[in-house]
Length: 256
Image 1 (cartoon, rainbow, N blue to C red):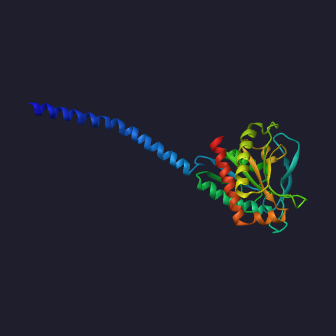
Image 2: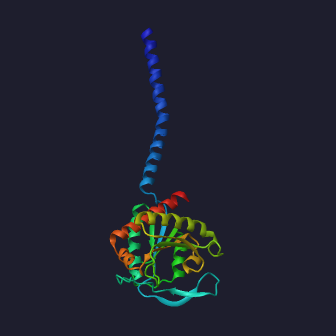
Image 3: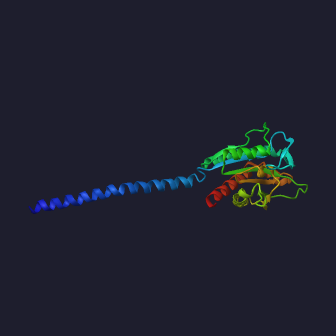
């Protein structure tokens, strides 16, 4: 009889353990799933984000005019020709597309859904139309890639433009745009050691005024400076620019 009670006691204990395990197993599965999701998020930090890359200018400028902002009577050129490298002779529109395509690949590798305004030179897309494309896609961020030029060939460095908060057309996107500009410029300077020319608010850019989504315009350097112009065509330096933009964009989405 005593053996019977001992056996019964052991069966009760084993049954309790199995029952507890049945409750713990779902919790363990949930924990494992969350852990895997966190790991995936660290590997793909831009997952779920939509980014539009606008490689500045195009093969041939369009000197026709369009309104600078909705309802505005102020007219501005649809697409200018851009600058040209004083040392390399490379047009700005060639540089911007090289950078744009490399950024597309890098952003996609981090999980982003990436869109391009153009993927070749033979297009005719005005600055207003570029903004409307971003609006229609409802992207999380528009990144415009440009290079700068100046009469003084000694001027060099990187700057980022963003929409002004003192403009009725862009006041709703100014805050996020400024934040993106700040993080991206930090990433660029850290990775290139270029001269930091700061972030600047602008109210006179058609592509900003027609946008309803956050947008920044990166001036990657001065093609009017011989040394910086050479750098801008260097694949190694372009890789540093891409890395800086990528790092800053991830920081922006992480901290917004």
